[in-house]
Amino acid sequence: MQIIRDRGELDAALEALRADGGAVAMVPTMGALHAGHMALVEEARRRAAHVVVSIFVNPTQFGANEDLSRYPRREGSDAQMLGAADVAILWAPDVDTMYPNGPEASVKAGSAAQGLDGDSRPGHFDGVATVVARLFEQVKPDVAVFGEKDYQQLLVIRQMVAARKLKVEIVGLPTQRDADGLALSSRNIYLTDEERLAARALPRALGEAAQAMIDGGDVAEILARAEERLAAAGFDPIDYAALRDAETFAPMDRLDRPARLLAAAKLGSTRLIDNLPVIPSI
Ligand code: PAF
Image (cartoon, rainbow, N blue to C red; front, side, top):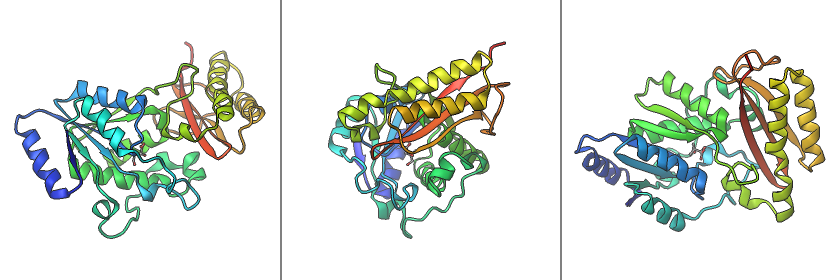
């Protein structure tokens, strides 16, 4: 695996890679890789002859009071994992290479950025759309794989790709979870042992709420109960528990079409997010 930090070197390496005519799949990441990321890499491997992974902790998607400075960085062990997974290129630019004119979000995220994390983290999705657009411009992948754990982000990226008419297929992969249900996340390492136990309440509250909706319960009441359950487990504040259309991301107050149930809340100093698909029974 080549570890590349320079644009010129990236262009040359990609040209050499594409010489055999095989497709290129990309997995954009911010590093601190775990089994969830490696599942994205495996999926990329299945879909293309060559896999490019990027590691870039993107400053434009972090708010002023967020965890940019303490975000876990461990490129050495990340590179070992990627090398063992047969990744061809690790693209690891620094901030000046990614943002030669200074780190500013220049791409406006579309309608999927409205509400939920778009409200809790103002400007976050503009930063995501900006960096992913740049990564796609640099690598020009045929396909790119993202986790459904960041479901709103996945829809924002799909909209950005459609708006810019980019020729890249966006693949969403179901969330990878620990044995007790907690969604894998680079931020889970912030949790104390006690918080890690309490964190199980998040997937459980979502699972119960999803089932109650499928059973025909009132959506608003179920969402309120899920928030109460999170509060009882020690989450504070609870940013949202919400039901959204799985494709358009429009808010829903009845389960009458395929939906996504999403929640975000803080446990101690760690903000956790999770979501589940909810399909109405026929
Ligand atoms: O999901 C992430 O790790 C990041 O938001 C992404 C897509 C790599 C953009 O920085």
